[in-house]
Length: 511
Image 1 (cartoon, rainbow, N blue to C red):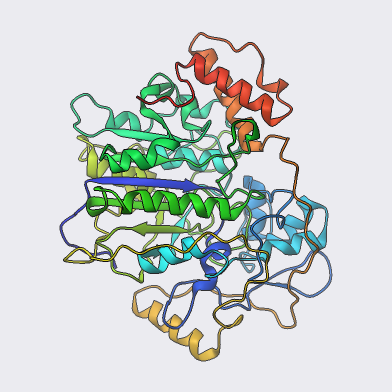
Image 2 (image 1 turned 45 degrees about the vertical axis):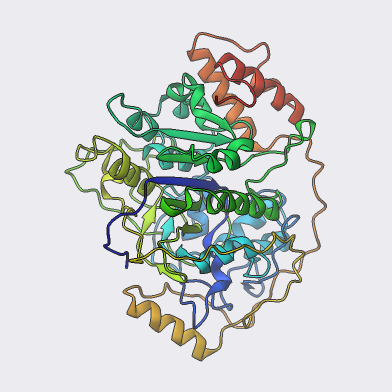
């Protein structure tokens, strides 16, 4: 349960990473003395075709496991959850379609089995240490059973403008975000967005006209030391390799290096910890969506409270926004949080919008954007210590996992450990989700996929480029080339730098 003490936070920093599920990243932390709703170690998924089921494995590698990118569009997520692309609940076992879906996407049954490979406390030391030293939430769900752009829009606007697909070119421009609410001239609070290259947010028309709100991530550490962070700060990773400018992806999106993202998490945490901001800042590390990776917890359905504004059904699938997406990692950091805190309360990305409105906006008592925001749990009362902790945990170095790092606990929990962890969860008011474990399974053992040369832009980079092109056009301007002409990462860099310049922003802007 969340604490009920006075709120000690003057500012919130959110670092949102990419496309990893809870079980994939933190599931193997489950133990008798750390009763998180994670992996017992014998969970399985149905294979493609005939043969034994595929069991989870603690052998995830930092890179080269997940090429091609697992799919996470709406029909694919439905297949992963319900074993059918329509998302129909026919009473079948849930969360059994991950292997089948990735086998279909990759064209390989052995590659499909890789979707069950997970990290653990030693192969993901930074995030795992923060989870255990502060607070982890094992019921944070992505807002949409779909891809990155809709989920990132929900994290800032509690809606995706009706779009449920990654091909969301128009929606980012038109969204009314929580940034706009904070920016009320009468509101004393303000915000900053730190980026290391292009972002979805820069294609929002309101933000595109306010480039002074964007800051180069290189400044983040110094700005923390100088006590310059405002009430709300949103930190974005780099989404692609930009070798020409010496930038490498830190988003952890498959198949970019997970240890590079771990290093980013460590940098953000350490910058806050070693600054005057530490005492009264709440850091949230969260992921936008699960990226098609295995998780054993079935996402909940929602029932609209009619006292809040409605959201029209999606334009593409008629989806009524009444079901959450797959679970993602979420870790809260503050010296006001007791080490080993585990939150079983249900959150989703709308919780970010709702909490910011409650903490920092003058209209906190007015109607929310819609019923999804209105019903989302807030986390302003997460502090559970009456006095601030004197310790400032030092993180281990990020580790490039090759899949062979030994797991600190038993691969499959003993009956005693399993029962102890489950009993502790039940005592805390949350029964553990059903675990499906078939007899005589196999574990993934496909050969390593050669690393990509990195010259082709990531899909998200291309989508940002198309969204930026639309935004620039709506501002009455025009790029000299089109997003359709992008072939290489250098093409993407050139196009997006041009688009940002037309919006009034240059690399390193923010003063």
